[in-house]
Image 1 (tube, rainbow, N blue to C red):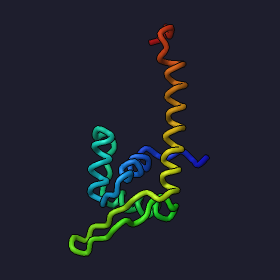
Image 2 (cartoon, rainbow, N blue to C red; image 1 turned 135 degrees about the vertical axis):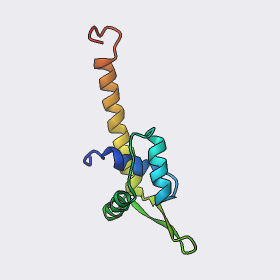
Image 3 (tube, rainbow, N blue to C red; image 1 turned 90 degrees about the vertical axis):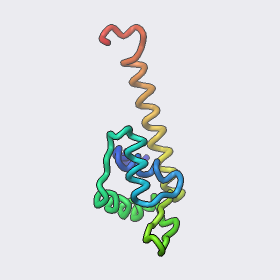
Length: 107
């Protein structure tokens, strides 16, 4: 298992389930996180370069007319995203069992 993804990285990868360009990723991350995760353009492009180096994403298309690059997940990116999703599901299940049970007196 890989190291758990940061929240920002998870949202970026989740945004790339369908190909998107940088501004689309910034907007999508904000929407998916209900405004809790906001990414500046400089931060995003550094993150995209890092994700490309790790082999999680790749360039999908590059429009020379509007100078927009679209990115998409690689097979490795899909694998890492799904693996982290499973890890978080397990965390939620354990937390619900320990914190959310009807018999929990410490609510």
